[in-house]
Amino acid sequence: MTFQDMPKVELHLHLEGAAPSKFIAGLAQEKNIDISKIFDAKGDYAYDGFDEFLSTYEAACEPLKTPQDFYRLTMAVLEETAKHGVVYAETFVSPDFCGGGDVGAWREYLDAMTRASVDAERDFGITLRGIVTAIRHFGPEQAKTAARCAAETKGDFVVGFGMAGAEMVGRPKDYAYSFDMAREAGLPLTCHAGEWDGPDMVADTIRDLGVSRIGHGINAVQDPKLLAEIAEKGIVLEVCPGSNVVLGAVPDWQSHPIVKLRDAGVPITVSTDDPPFFHTTMTYEYDMLAKTFGWGAEDFAVLNQTGLKAAYCDDATRAMIAKKLEAAQ
Ligand code: ADE
Ligand code: ZN
Image: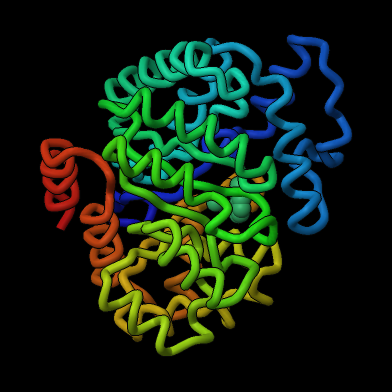
């Protein structure tokens, strides 16, 4: 079995960030929106550094206007993701890009994404669940509207709440109200931290937001006591090595701390984050882990078991995915 065929769990995938550049360019053309500045001569997304990545990402969202656009986006992303063996994915979706935080509008977008996930499960054999996501640099007030959307629509598709965006904006406690609201609605929580900032940001995120998973979390490696705490609490890191290398959070694959994190007993998973932006796929991530660190089928099986255990889906879905993973053993 090749790495591509191997069934996989992917927990950290931004829906808009996974939009193939050709899909976004085509949609922009249909709607007469000029976003040509975000593409290079080959038609790939073009940006320099993390801040520009975020503004390019937001510009790429401009043609995504209607629920039907999100139906098409979800289908396009799942077709591509399934090609790399992913049988279960969780995707970050932001009400900020789906009706601007209005709960009524959000329900319409959610309905479209849910329909797409059902159709993609039938057509491509991949199961998708959604994590409603606040955008940190839009500020704490806007985060509350995202949390309200999450709390109001928890259900078969919406299974979690999280936060992405510019990590250096504010402190975790500034967003505690939103995370409390989502938790009280019964949603499990994840938050990007320790991608850019140091171990203190990871520690504060765990303490002030009560998350069960951390997006990235790689800079926790600088603090052995924090690593021990993460391992002891069983907080799962959604590690995205290819993203870290391309955005410059680490200098290269060889210096990525994923092995140190794993050796410290921290539960780790592997994801692509925003695959077309980083010229990656789940197959490429596995290929690079194999090439750089000598990882093989057993290492990847553990990653996927950790991912499935940490997934926010219900137990019936977890059991169904477990069978798919076992069938390949
Ligand atoms: N949104 C999409 N990708 C992201 C990343 N790597 N970090 C923070 N926010 C993001
Ligand atoms: Zn991310």
